[in-house]
Amino acid sequence: MTCQAEQYAGWYLVAFVDILGQAQLLRQMRGLPNKANQNQMKEFADLLKKTLRTVKDLRDRFTKFFEGANKKHRDVSGLTPEQRRLYARSKSNPLKSHMFSDFVVLFLSLRDDMNKVPMSGVYSALTSAASSFLTMLAQGQAIRGGIDVGIAVELSEHEIYGSALSRAYELESNTAHYPRIVLGEELVKYIQYQRALPEVDIFATMNKRVAALCANLIAIDDDGVPILDYLGDGFRQDVARAVDSTLVKRGYDFIIQESAKYQANKNSVLAFRYTLLRNYFEHRMPSWGLA
Image (cartoon, rainbow, N blue to C red; front, top):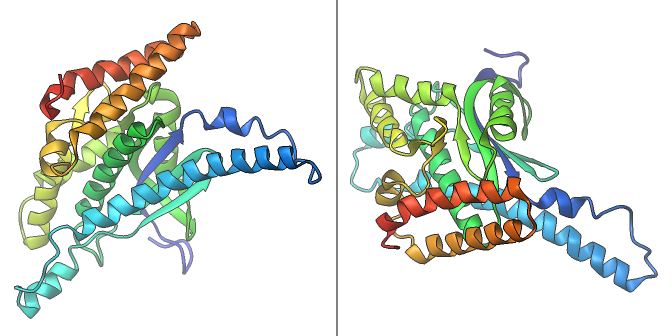
């Protein structure tokens, strides 16, 4: 349905991601530096670059992985004109993003009036989140997030409002607790619904098959919460076959480093959170050829 000529209210997937540790850096910006003081100017510039670059890096990385997933297996040279016409409608709706402070919001319309396989966008979003999470950890930056679906409206080209955003935010802020990406109940239901639909046409068949791939990216954590299984067999076998296991090892080394730091500082809350993350890694590392 439409609210105004340029606005559409419908189902959206929304990811709300918090880049951990950035808030402490931002709090160091207590005022503008004295332009006559070169040391202050340099410190301020370095701090701004460090925080802004990290946020932009996550957004750009997520978008790059999303676009790459959408282009996968898109050689149409052997298709007939009719098959090409149908295939053109099997792509995902575009991914959009919004940044504020140390948060990144990414959202995707699930409407299927033009692009008939919205599950391809869900799959691309989940694999992009998994790839981004792993590569950011390997670079020494932890993130935490929530992904869910719900009703929303695009207020502008890069701004969304509605239950989808609210659910994703609640998952990140109240459920995730430690560096992981929590998946919402409505998203899990949506994937299950798509898997159960009858294969009445080629688009329904494609949605059903991609939904099965999405289900393979979900695991239930020790607290009973559905999470994105970025080191699981579903991701490793179908998405990350070209990923060198050293990326996983670098992420694990960063986790050990952070855990030791918080233990030394007697920060029991953060030490315990990184212990949970370490347990997740150690349970799945053998599948990557890592002891």
